[in-house]
Image (cartoon, rainbow, N blue to C red; front, side, top):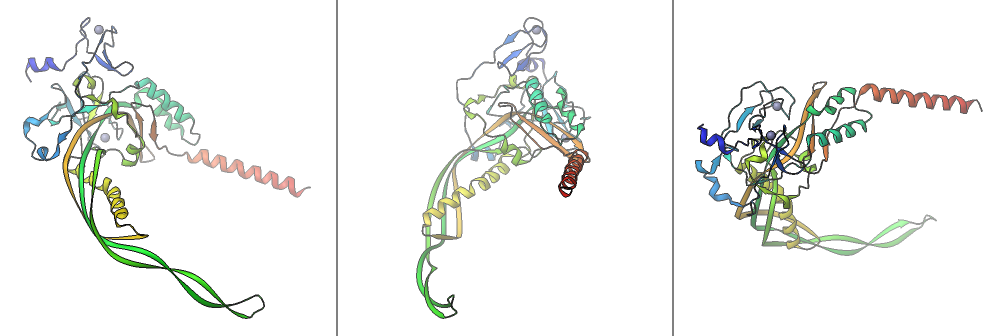
Length: 368
Ligand SMILES: [Zn+2]
Ligand SMILES: [Zn+2]
């Protein structure tokens, strides 16, 4: 790396020379020593959609490092790769909790993010809401208190793809229409006499159906991380996407970013699965009738565009009784997503107390 390039993404404090860090409270680069503040230039262009087809043959010039001085390190335990800029250090892995021992190397180029949502919750705010969350969980074992320490969670940008696409779906199937037939049957009345009765019975008549439906999908959000369960990531939504900022390496100062583990094509396949139920429901309403059978369905995707986005979370992990527990805090809203182990002893104690109460109540009741 030449010295000139090194200057570009390095943010020294103009009054004391220390490294400026991104401050979630006001969105400024801030000196941790003298408090000097510097604005990150606001780009006026909206975060651009990029053509998906053109990116399928990615040329090297479309790839870049997140910052020229970006370092990358891979967790030896779970394989997650995180990217950061000095003076940030690798520290412990946000996803599995182990101390990362590998030496950071110069980061490999990636498809550069089009935009990101900057952190607006500070590490302190995230830690204190986490403490509250933990204390409201009575069954949590005392070991969980480790999460209450401020260094237990770290700010990291998670990678996402969003896709826009037009769809044209050709289908064949059957339309089922109900009709009713009056049937006669016999039964015994209360006096035991055989009587004749009638009832309406529903039948379905099927007609073959085929046709084409078109759809338009906008900004379908697909996580590009495999380090966290997708239901937990989905639970962090909604993200205030209207606040997206154009990517600037300055946002990375003091935070890490995870390198995408799901590539652009794999993300596209996931997007197809995500929108499939909506397409199927369009096909069903196009078939009409009371019931539908879909026999074949084929979808063409056109005008596909994508964005690579980074979204902010505070994340931490630790093992308890051999099981991995992950905690996530939305870096925009402070919302907490996580599971926690139940303490066997606390639950056992509660069960025993209930039994004693029942027993005493039983004794009192039998003595009356
Ligand atoms: Zn300073
Ligand atoms: Zn790990």
